[in-house]
Image 1: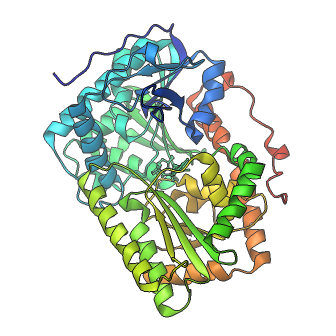
Image 2: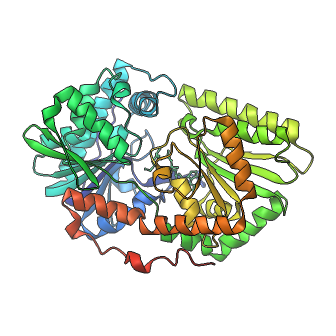
Image 3: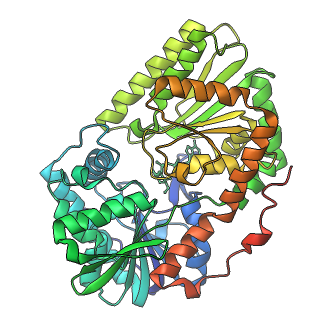
Length: 499
Ligand code: GDG
């Protein structure tokens, strides 16, 4: 029997429920004899935490382990954490299979061929049903439930069937593909109907929202879709006698928290130390990505290799630091990509390196938050060059971490963030010679130009931070009235001040 029994909640019901694939917790096994649950930091958690605290809030999600997790084992929280159990086989089929080998590539330009596997689909249905049941059991009468992301696209309709009284929001963190790609999915109608169970469907960009509206009119008929002229809303769908709102809500980061960390003594000292360790006067190019084929790591390495080969960059003057966070390591395309990237790094260092002067510092690891902020502060050039990305929070974090107005951002046109961060150095990462040119230009960027660009970028990121994102979504969902006050945005930018 694969499915572990569901942990029973001992909590009273909640007025505001977040449903996400993962709980914002991880098991710290530094001391293997006494593993402990710790909070996982992240923008989504910090945006939703004040609301969860103020509102009898609860978070429903998987705890990240296929062994049974009971309520009692989770840390004492003001926010109720409800663990949804997953068996080993379900993890393989629902998470690695349908979520990450079917939906992920299908929604990212079919960069690798998606698997269309019936058994994984059944597992996805079963697990989504379990999430919906647990959310239904936890939600108080008339509660608001906010469902997150592509792993849970059936939950809105399943939850509505169980609890027609609750208000349901759904937000997709990844791009929504054009209809001609989505229509490849054998279970396209079920997935579309699953999402349409929500009252409000949020996408990162207007383009994703429009793709969804086109899809609905194609599968349900034109008369089911109405355009909406009130941004962030782009349309309404008439579904089962209900009106479903569809809009674009670009996610962001907790800019003030990142800035505070970046200004701390420990981060500034570590940033100086990193610069010294990498060779004092050498220019530092930095990239931080999950090791995913969508992130364009291999194209970036090829461009850097090209600059070294052309003599436009030299290992004695320039170093590329690539943090590649381990991700989905049992999925075949991820294993293959890792092997390819590591071979490229070896080739570049073997060809262009000297003792004490390695051109690429590659780390296949997760660094802690302080180290990440120090790397952001130490960098001269931040390379964010995905082939497709819903938003890309690394780009926004880098900007928030630069109160000194230093650093240049090279940003792919295919990251959602490029729609807002127009003062970055924008690039098409598929165009190798353009990528090389923009990387070289970033290394040479005039200081006054760089500071002016960073000032504009910072104003944008501080004005539209993750708190504003959550507020905007919940207000349109019709649930904005109960939130704690937002910070006064006009008072915020300190953003453009020099450290
Ligand atoms: C999905 C969408 C969308 C990475 N390495 C380390 C580390 N990270 C943190 C970053 C950032 C987060 O992980 C990655 O967020 P991204 O947005 O860059 O990318 P995805 O993981 O693909 O996220 C994406 C996002 O959802 C939100 O909607 O923007 O498009 O694909 O916060 O800082 N953090 C630490 N150590 C690391 O080594 N501490």
